[in-house]
Image (cartoon, rainbow, N blue to C red; front, side, top):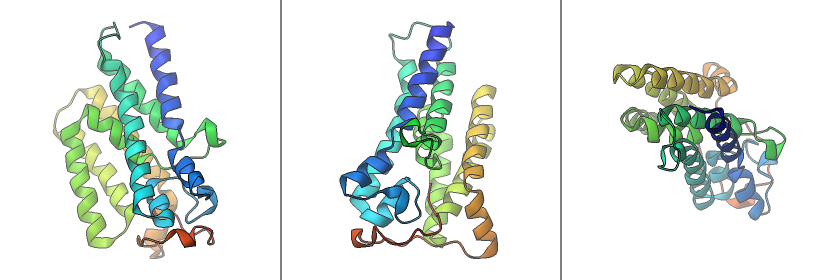
Length: 216
């Protein structure tokens, strides 16, 4: 495998991941998402501040950039062996790009949607288990943060139980752990009983005081 493809995949993955869709969608509505709601550019904060349409748009776009960063190295024009290794590089770079975007002064979200989009391409069965975990936890308890943390844990466990290639399971574990660590403040609030449950808010509340972060 040539250094050209490795470097190209890493750069493309980072730049794709760094695309600040949450910030851009909110800006199109006249809102600085870093100063509204929880201050996080993730889909849930956008949804809480601007409504379901805007939030779901960000969710799809954030997942899509992870999927593209992971999937394009598998295309026929990439003439190299072990294309799946390039896909691993792509998803890792995209997650880093989302969390530390060069376009927003290295501020970003918690990479849940971007990691999910990339891992769906690589390990769809494990992601299905994680998705079920997320849905069950969220609708039972209404904590997006807890649902995301447990979904990340579930995809890690599933990646080992389903016997994927060792490198895939290792990268999945790294990404899942990264997502969990990005929720460290949420974990602290969950343990203290001060974490906020998810409640949709109309756009009129977009300029309200910054609130505890409860989303990816």
